[in-house]
Structure formats: C-alpha cells, structure tokens
Image (cartoon, rainbow, N blue to C red; front, side):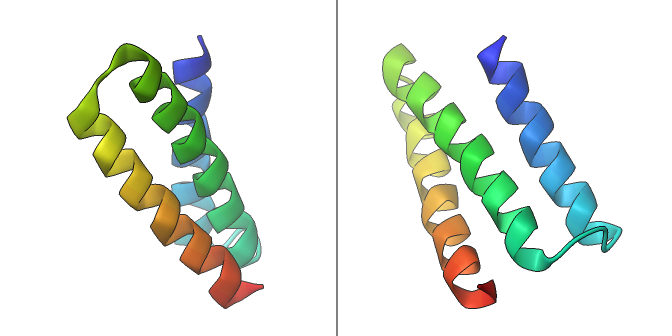
Length: 69
C-alpha cells in the first residue's frame, strides 16, 4: 500500500510540473517524498538496482528543492 502512495506522489509531482499547477519547489518536494518512500521500500526488499535509481532521484530532487527555494 505504501508503495502505491509513492507512485501516486511521483505522478502528482509530474502533473504539477507539466500543468504548472504550483511552484516548482512544491513539485520537487512531492518528488522527494515519493522517491524517499520508494528508496526505503527498495532497501527493505534488497532491490539494489531500483534502490540505486531511486537514490539518484532523491539527490536530483534535493538539488531541485535547493535551486527553486
């Protein structure tokens, strides 16, 4: 169930950017939360390749939050 929350957050974040529904920093915060949740799930499941991908996304999201704050 929590995995679906992560999926929905990242979809919402993408929609907020593409439709210009809010400030860019808000979208990056949504991405950050979604990717962090997924990273924790992947760590627990020992899905190392997916964990690596999500950790890269977390770093990109942090850069976005810093840039747009």
